[in-house]
Image 1 (cartoon, one colour):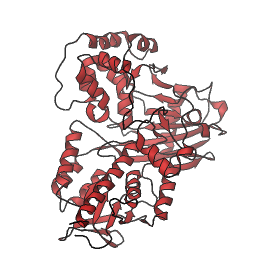
Image 2: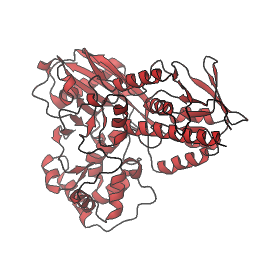
Image 3: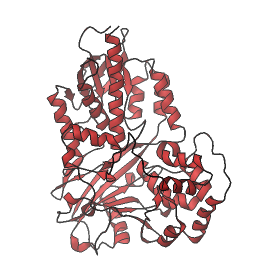
Image 4: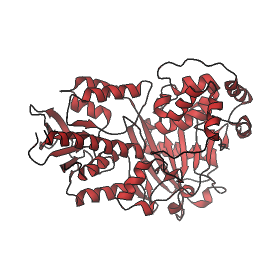
Length: 477
């Protein structure tokens, strides 16, 4: 039984750890813990980072979050930021393939063409590729196995060209992964469900589109696809930090946890790099899977082994500012994606000054260019100068930019995207089952149930809820 104010330590100051700490301060069932947050870096936010670029706040990591799931919107509402949310000014997305930009048709569902006519007009697929995709309508049902990859399901139904030129740039781009590795159920569950409902994936998706949209507990009605903030997503981190300070949460930056031990009385001891020692009734590890694996190795070796098996890919965001005279024509849309099969260094390019109203007042045209995916580390091997020049040369080819950028920024994110490979969901279930033997310890972050900002917020909040529930039960024994 706990007789004193319980102490909970959150390790990791990314969005998952911050959301967990904030939820802990709200308490539950009479439990109002003392909260400490430890972050190894000298700043909070993890992959969310906003810095000044060309005199304006431009995100160096993610620049938006999904609006049609509730968790990020709800957190912004709690923090008084809801009125500041902004939607993209443009919605068109292009593909840079076959040597020019090609607009995506509106009837694609995560890269699956539901109409052969609209996809044929784009020139993204060859005539043979379009005919192969159409075979989905007549091919017999085939077994896929317990957790098939994106390629195994969609490639079987619609052919390799649809996978390589449409689906992988969209689904694989979100995870910086490969369609032949990523679990369809873990990365695109609605497609996995559609594949189970009917023999034909196209017919199943058409049936879904004909149904009247129904609001669910995880949807936000009448919302745009994405939201951001006028000062970038870093404003969300700043407001969370202020809220934690207001609620007397101890936040220590530059403090790396080097050892985690489970004590005989069920509490946990954390030893930090500066030799500071904390004792906690509960711990939330909101750290990358490989870091978490090291911390739990001494008392949960089976969990550590599972965590260490989660692989990560790296990415780089190259932000370039050009004088308007260097960019021929108006940029209508949010940017383009580049299929891996074409061999480009770029995976995507966001036209930031067209996408976001608050950046349109810039004196420059700003591009946020993404480089890197699973198995492609060419960008990591280049110096910043060489990387900028290589990205610029590809923009010359794609958009016809006519002179060098006048402002540049390179943001390297090594081992930043956890890969939801085939078997990922079962691995997470095994981790969670094994952790039931470690009362007072729970995990949160992108490595488990979703990589987007809302999913990470939800994961942090759920971890806090679980821990508060455990403490409440302990206090009433």
